[in-house]
Length: 186
Image 1 (cartoon, helix red, strand yellow):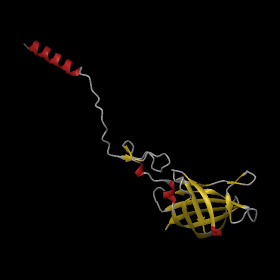
Image 2 (cartoon, rainbow, N blue to C red; image 1 turned 135 degrees about the vertical axis):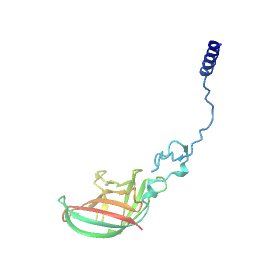
Image 3 (tube, helix red, strand yellow; image 1 turned 180 degrees about the vertical axis):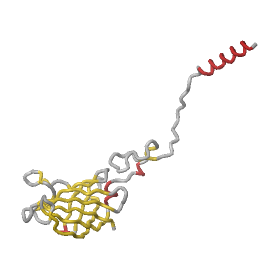
């Protein structure tokens, strides 16, 4: 009797263990929504989940605003300190066709500069193409012979803080001027 019981139990287990799994078709119930636009700063954050591009935010919204810039000015490659200054930067979206094209208005010389921002919290000054199609080292600054190059980095931990690092090449004085500072959003 005992052998028959063991045989029946083993046969039952063999039949149950060999039952084929059926994958049921349906939508997975994932709680997260994520941005599925590669130009967005938060591209694929909260993945896996449901794609929802209404959750996206872009570099133009990360940088946009008016900032008070406190920077140190250095002359020459030897970083000879010249002065500390405070100024105003206003950053806005340049056009409607891109989320990464920015215009920076700097109250120094009342100039407007073009920057390209990426989704990694960095905005870089665009190069200037001259009439002779030579790529110059930056954009026009204050005078037609001065050019500005450099970048701005957004602090990921402090949304009001922006690190500024500009180099200005000029045909007068020290030839190279460095602006190194921090801008705080107003």
